[in-house]
Length: 399
Image (cartoon, rainbow, N blue to C red; front, top):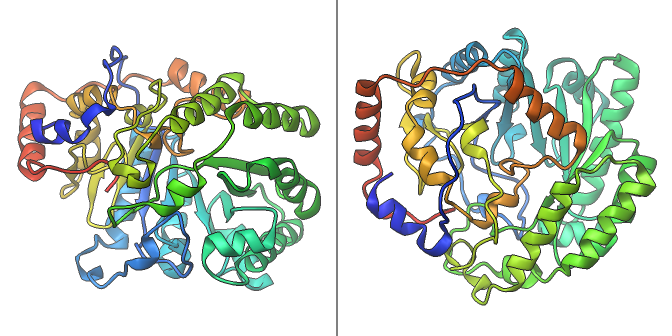
C-alpha cells in the first residue's frame, strides 16, 4: 500500500494482527452494473449510470474469472452484485449459469422490482443464484418506501418474495430465499416485527441483518442518512437481538451480538458522523476479515480485497491473474488488518457470522482448506509496483 493511501486512513488504523497461513478465498464478488431503479437514502448508486459500459469487462471474461475462482476453491461462493444487477437480466443469469456450470454456489441481493410474475420467479429458481436475497428496510411499508425513495417499493419487494416462495414450492430444488434487512435508528426497535413478517407471514428462509454504515457509494461531502439514523441504543439493540434469538430459534453467534453492540457504542461517540466515510471516527475493535476471504472484481476488471479503493488492487487482464492477485497481496492484507472503518460491520466483510452455524462454516474452511502458496518474490514485487503505479494518488476510504 502506498504511503499516501495509508495516510488516507487517518486515525482509523490500529496495530495489525499477525498473519495466518494463506487460505483460498471464500467469496468472489462480481459487479454486473452500477445503476439502480430505486433512490435509497443510504446509497448513491441510483445517481450513477452505465454510460461507459463499453469499457466494462465482458460477461465472457467474468465467466472465465468464475472458472479461475472455482479452481482456487471448489467450495467457494460467487456474489452477483451491482447496482441493481437484475436490470441487466441476461448478464445476471449468465453469471449464475457460469457458477452452476463450475459447480460452485452463487448468491445475490436484489431489490425485487424485476421479479414481477410467476414465469420469472420460476426462472430464478431454475437458473438463478442458489441463494436469493431481497432487500427490505423495514416491516413497515411507508418506512421502507421512504428510505428507498420510491413509492410502492415495499409492495414490489414483498410480492417478489411471495412469488419466489410459491415458485420453489412448484419447481422444487434447494434455492434459499432470504431477506436482507437494514437496521438503523428509526427501525431497530421493530426488529421483532421484521422477523415475524419474514419468517411467519412471507415464509422466507431467513432474515439477514445488515447495519447502518456510511452510505454506499457516497459521492458528496456530507452523508445525511448516516448522520440522522446513527442514533441506536446499543444495549436496547442487543437485548432485542437476544429476545428474537430466543423467540424465533435463530441460533445467533454471541460474539456477533457483542460486536453489534460495540459497533454502535463506537458510532455514538462520533462527533462528525455527517461526514460519512470522511469521518475521523472508527470502531473500538477490528471486526473485518475481508482480506482473508474476499475478492471483489468491479466492472472494469479491477480486483481488490474489499470494496474500498484506498487499498491497492490489480487489473485482471490475463488468464491466471485472479490467482496471482490473491497470492501476491500479503502487503495489502497487512495494511487492511489495521483498518477499523465502519464498513467492518457489513454483512459482506465482517469477521463474525451472525449465527453459530455460519461461524462453524468459517472454522471448517480454516481447518479443511489447503493453504495457498504465496507468489514468489518476483511476482510479489511486480504486483506491488503495479499497485503503487495505479494507486499512487491520495484516495479516500469508502469513496
